[in-house]
Amino acid sequence: MNIIITPRATEKAYGQSARNIYVFNVPLTANKQQIADAVAAEYNVTVKNVATAVQSGKAVRFSRGKNRYPGTTNRKDTKKAYVTLAEGSSIQVFEQPEAAAEEKK
Image (cartoon, rainbow, N blue to C red; front, side, top):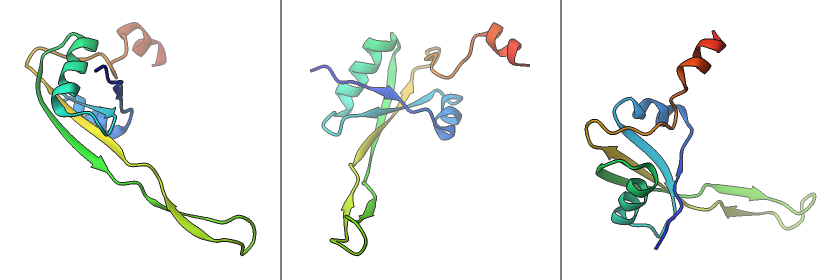
């Protein structure tokens, strides 16, 4: 089973990448072994550890017009995978090429 993983582009995820931990959005049905296999296949790295966290969807208020049918609903749940890579492995997700970094200065 092929699963689609996407890196999370947040400040916290960027800070974790300095410690060789990368954060990905994954499907709710994916298990740790499937996540490890997908990361290893897509980025050609060695996965050391995978930790997952399911974030519950927030409650959101809605209304269909003024004072008509008010109610609440929930956003979708999301699952995050914290993937620790083996020593010497890295993923070029947040790193910029040296030439592009120098041009911005």
